Length: 168
Image 1: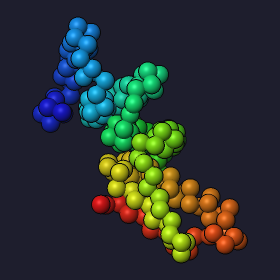
Image 2: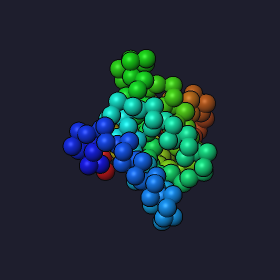
Image 3: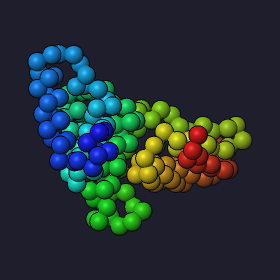
């Protein structure tokens, strides 16, 4: 975080090397920190190397390391930054859809949807803590709702109102 705050992105790799050396010598477990992974992803993205964040994510998945919404929010920021030119403004890149689906499947954001007996759906988007993750989540949930509404449009369990909440 200090490298990013000081705008010294060139030092991130040196810090990462020192962390890896210490982790190899002293098996303290702090290298497996989700906060560290999220910070590395933000730093890689800020340094103009968001593909390194993707490589770290792939390594975490292969190692079955537990992840949280904090890491996924950082990753989605890096992905959206890297592939923004390919998709245009306001539209998530295809890879972001895959990452969102993986995060949803593992439950990192919890279950933000509540449906009342009156058919009103409330989706709490406050867990999507970065602008990029909020954008991807909004698209994800609108697509999900669209499919759900089409599938249940004639039934008695059809939704009558949907509310998206983006702040606590």
